Every structure is written in C-alpha cells, then in structure tokens.
Length: 338
Image: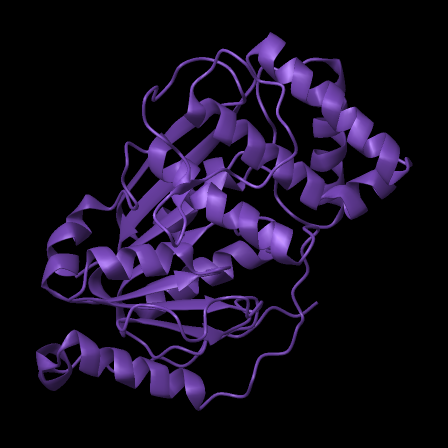
C-alpha cells in the first residue's frame, strides 16, 4: 500500500494573518473545510456505532476529567491563549462533549470538532463551537497550513493503523501555527493487575488489534513519535483509573449534568461494585460499556455467542474488584517550534 505524499507546504503565517481575530481565522478554516469534497467512509473501528457508544464517549469525557484533577486539558501553556481567544480543533470529536465544554469555559476562543461519524450536535451548541465531517485517515487533512493554535484528540487508537500514526502526527505539525500545542490522550489497551478471565480477554484484544495492523502500545510511543516528527517540549503524564474499587476522588462525582441540571448516571449494566467511590464506579461502568461496544468484534474472535460473551464480562467485572484492576490513560503534549 503506497503511503500518502506529504502535502505541499504554504508560506508561514503573514503579519496580516497574525492580526486576525480568532473568529476571523476560524472562519477561514471553516471555509477551507467546506470547500473540500465530502469525506468517504473509509476508516475502520472495531467499536460499535450507535447511541450506546455515543453515551459511553460522553461518560468517558467526565471520568477522564475527574481522573486528571478536574482539568479538560493538560497543555497548561494554552490557558492564556484560550482565555484571550484562539482556534482549537478536536480530532475525532464523537458526540462533541469536549468541544462544547471547552467552548463554554473559553467564550473568546473558537472550537471546531471533526469526526467521520456525524453524531455531533447540529443546532443546540455554543455559538463559538462548530462541527464538520472529516475522515482523519485521509491526507492531507482538510485544514490549511499554520491555521490553528491547539489540537486535541482522544482515544483514536481504535481507528488508526500503526502505519497511519506518523502521518497524522506530521499533519498536526503542518496545520498548527508556530508555537501551537497538540494534546493526545490515549489509553493503554491492556488493563493491569488482571486475573484469568480478564487476561484471556486482554490477550484476544491485543492479538486482534495487532492482526489488523493496529498498535496496542501507541500510548507509550507517542512522546518519541512526536519528538521525531519535529515537535519540542514533549511531555507525558498518566493516570490509573480503578475499575470499581477504592476511594479515589471520593466525594467528587464523575457523572455529568443532564439538561435539567441533575446528575445522570453513566449508561451501563448494573454494577456489582460496593464500597468504592463514585468515580471508581463510573470508571468501571465506562470500561464495561467499552467492552460491550466491542462485542460484535470480540465475541467473534473468542468464538462465542453474544450471550456467552456477556457472561464472560460478568466474571471479568467481578475480577476487577478482587484483583484491584485498573486502566492507564496517557496525556501527551507537545509544541510546534516557533
């Protein structure tokens, strides 16, 4: 398979471009996107599509916010530019939760969410938040050179092949303005502190992804990949999410507010997790939903019926509490050189 050619470069930002407001620069980016051909559905993911998966992604956003000390982003150098007004892109935005939360928190900045699955909001959203359909596995991305200040992506490893990661990182370097930042949040696919049934499940997930050309260990490789592509000030941190045990973040809710302002529990099967914080319970529920979303793909790999697969998940969930199992999530940030 031939690798895509590097897109032709354009001149760096002119003084005129630098003097434009965030809204004016965002309008240029949106016009550039809208002028491209509509994306073709070419990317693959073993995750199911539909409302249950979208609900899981919404819950994931709030669980990870709690895990990372109530911060929606780790690139702290972006705090000032976001307050003052800049252009931020969310790659693979899903239902658009992060973009909408950020656009509410930073009304002077413009947030543009991109995803091939157009389940993002069409009408009810903040005025400084936009969404567009985009296949991030097709290069060059429909974004002009040196056009955005901040790129955020999360959980893209279910979609990208191992060979596609360096090209996406190279695209990030192209579209960021000098001095801009990228933040990549990825989970380690293999859960930790596991027992028999969980390890059996882990082995099949890792093997299945490898057979498809995906890299289960990309979360730990991203820092060196970003540095090799030319980014500077690369740093990484991770948080371990307990799967239904312990009292981490006790007294703080990982649940998100509903439209009526009341907490809405994560969409999941009834959990058998007593004696733990709400955060630990939500982390377990979100991860159970992920495994349920993988059911069509993983049940086939395990040569079992959907019913037997669900029985296996029940056993696995019990093991989480007994073994103190957890999932590691990594946040990797890097800056484009000035």
